[in-house]
Amino acid sequence: MKKLLFSFLFLCFWITSLAQDTVYKSQTNVQYYANSINDKNSYMNERCVLDIYYPANIKNFATVIWFHGGGLTEGSKEIPEALKKKGLCVVGVEYRLTPNVSTVNCIEDAAAAVAWVYSNISKLGGDTNLLFLSGHSAGAYLSMMLGLDKKWLMKYTIDANHIAGLIPFSGQCITHFAARKEKGMSSSQPLVDELAPLYYVRADAPPLFLMTGDRELELWGRYEENAYMMRMMKVAGHNATKLIEFPGYDHAMTAPAFPLLLAEVSRIVALKVEK
Image (cartoon, rainbow, N blue to C red; front, side, top):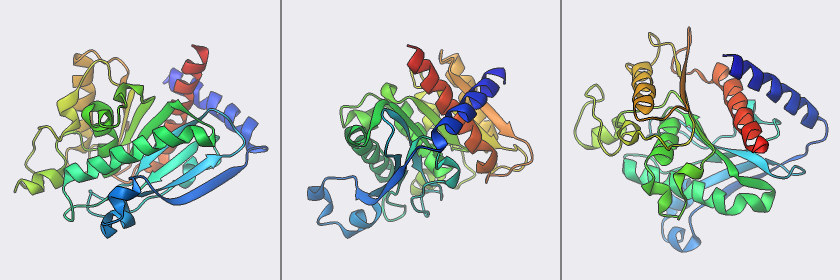
């Protein structure tokens, strides 16, 4: 907790120093697949887009790529208000939804969006060494799949270990219930297979900061999934995994989580600057 407090105080100083002089710009509905892929698919044209909110007069800024929640069946891209005017770039990603497509397609879209940011963020002043993946619920699941199962980003010759940090909000660590439904399973029947972040625990993964609501108020088993994820990451030798539970908060636990996301970003940025 002392490290988090220090990071939060550093963040407050950093934000205050930037607030008066920073100018922010936005780009909306940017397609992240190549036009040759998108032209003949109206659903991809509609869903495979992202919004960018960035500090226009800061160089080498960090970027949070934010995946929206909604169980992989609903939801749309967003730039969370809590992340605006903080000296960061925020990218809100929209992706195709089940049952129109498979869970695999959702992960593929998320990977394509990250690859687009990786290839283009430096043109806006961002640092590709400071890309963070985050999101709530289904979005948290997508962020963990990309950061732990290296094959999704490797398609774009990106090593997932290059991601600066994974900061999922109440993410599903076992196989997502949308994927289980595709197999004819009920949402209460657990499964850990190749579509589970938990399947890919490894020592060399990016820093992982897990956050959930109260274990008694969360979606069934969500805290316990994250607690087991933390334990197995540590068993695998990953010492940069931590977990925070927010007492009194249900699955909609983003309010207390956003300040800790910002503190974690500032902590990692400070470490990289020191190096």
